[in-house]
Image 1 (cartoon, rainbow, N blue to C red):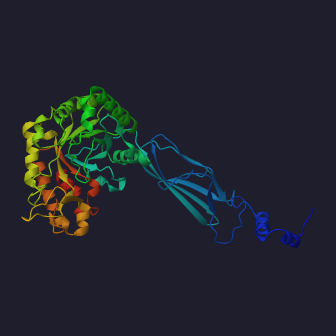
Image 2: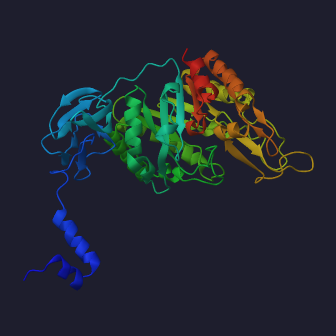
Image 3: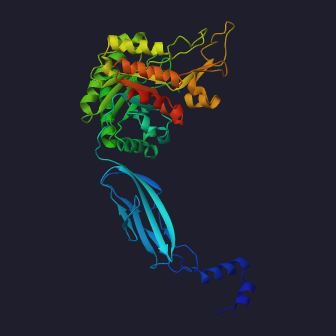
Length: 451
C-alpha cells in the first residue's frame, strides 16, 4: 500500500515524518559529500586510533588507521614525522628505533585546501648514555608532583617520591603508574641523559618531607628478613620493567619509634641486597638525618651516596621556640660535617636544601612560637605569590613571619658545598620551586655546582 506525503502527515506524528524525510535524503558524508568552493577536506575518526599523545618504547609501533577521508579517493594524503613527509597511504605505522619526542602530522589536501591533525609521540629509549655532571644536583619530585614541574635543564638526577612502603613490606606504586607518569618521566629524563630514581618511603609529613612522630612504616619491613627480601624483589621487578635507574631510600620515618635502632641496623643489609639484585649500574642512595640518631646508622658505603637532610635545625619549632631561620648556612655546614667527619667521605655526601618556608601563625607572650600547632610550611612558589621579591630575601613579613631560603642564601650554600668537595646537593622539592628561572632555587644551585 502506498501513501502520499499528505496522507502520511495526516496519519503519523509530525516528528516521525521529519525523521523519514531525513533518512530518505541521508548520504554517507565520508564517501559522498557535497563540497562547495572553499570547503576543507574532512578526516573522520572511525575509532580511537589517532591519539593526541602517547608514550611508547623504542621498537614499538604507534598505529594510525581506521580513518576515512572525504571526498573519498580525491584527497592528497601526507604523513610526516618531525616535518619530514614519510608516507601517502591512508594508514600509518610509526616504528621509532630511538628515543625522543616525535610529532606525527597528517595533512589531507583537496583543491588547494588542507586539513591537518597532529599527534605527539614520546619514545622511551631502550638504552641511553648518562650525562657526565661535575656534581650531583638532584631534585625530588613529591608524591603530588607532575611532569610539568620538572625543570630538566637545572638538574642532574630526578628522585620521584612515589614508592610507599608499608609495615608488611608491600610497595604501593599506584601514583607512579597512573597515566604512565613514571614512563613519561623516565622517557624525558633518559632522552636528556638524566637518571631517574624511584624514592621509597614510609609516612612523611607534607611539604617538608619529615617524619610523622611515632611513625615506623618502613622499619618493620626492613627488620623482618622475609619481608625485606620480598621488598627487594618487588623493587627489582619494577626497576627492570620500567628501566628506572635505581632506588632512593628516604629513611627518616623513625621519629619517636621504639625500635628505630633495629630498623637502622637493617638498613645496611637492605642497601647491599638492593645493589646485588638490581640491574648493573643501578643507583642506590639513602636519605639520612643529622639528629643524635645518626650515630646508629650502619655502614652505608655500599650506597652510591647519602642525601643529608641538612635543613630544619629543630631549634625554631615547638612550644616557646624562638622565631628564626631554621635552615641557615651554619646549620647546613654542621649537618654536612657530621656525615663527612663520622660516616663517609665528602665524595659520597649530597647535601639538601629546602624549597619551602617555615611560617609562624601564633606567638606566646614572649614573642616566641606558641605551640606545636602554631606553625606550618609554605612552598617557595607560594611565598613568591605573597611577595614577588621574595627571591632576594630569606624572610617575608606575612602572618607572624615566614623564614625560608632565597636565591642569595642558596648561592652561599652551593658555593660552600662546592668548596668543601662534597658530591653535590639536592632540593626538596622541585614542584615547589619558582617557574621563573631567574628566581629558581634549583637553577641557582645548578649554575654554581656545574660550572
